[in-house]
Image 1 (tube, rainbow, N blue to C red):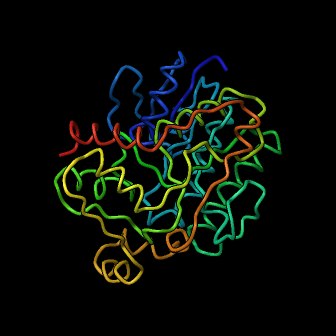
Image 2: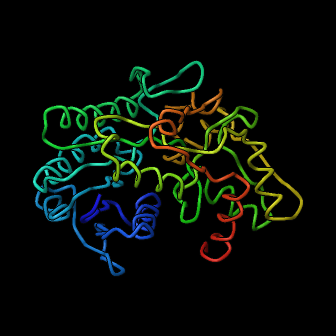
Length: 308
């Protein structure tokens, strides 16, 4: 799709990856953030306000919603943010692409597919389900055209506010213990940031994406033990790994609010958590998801040069 592509939350890990992907595809990009605008595409706006959202989306053909409240504020703030963003997208006559996750399903048996019910009973899962319904209802009513791209936990260059971030990559480079959140031996889909960005850009470009949620392509599910093994193989040194179990999570959560919040979705950590992306691949053609070994090497290289 030609025209202006606007990325909200453009300084976050997913948003910045989407900006890079869209630029590489030759699109005209506006990179929106609440902080001071940086770079040739930078635009400062507070999209939690109606005026800010309308200004950010003005003239857009496609808007990528990568902005989000702090994790512990999802329940209170995410639905309201979504309503405000929808107002901006509607005013622009644009298409909305939502950077989504897998919280809506709650605990499941077997790989997750897009046709599963939104059965999450936990507060964050219900908030994400409300967000998704607001977006899809706006599409059905004709207010906007919209699509959602869902991804699991991510890692990659620039990914620091993720459970597969500094406690894995920076720790290994420093010769410290690389820590996996959850059972080390349960298979888990993990997404590479540039692959997430490529999937979202494809959804923005393709009309057949509209009106649906899609699981974005990722490499094969991997256990924490195997993933950390790839990290240490690339980092060098004597491997040191550890899994954060439920008991340790509860204990650390007494004084760390982010770790405390993870308890609400521990079902993602103590059993297989696998996303089936076959619908995306069937609909949009052959997709090369980055092999984990390649993604791990690139992420370690980024941490070597960027992480304090």
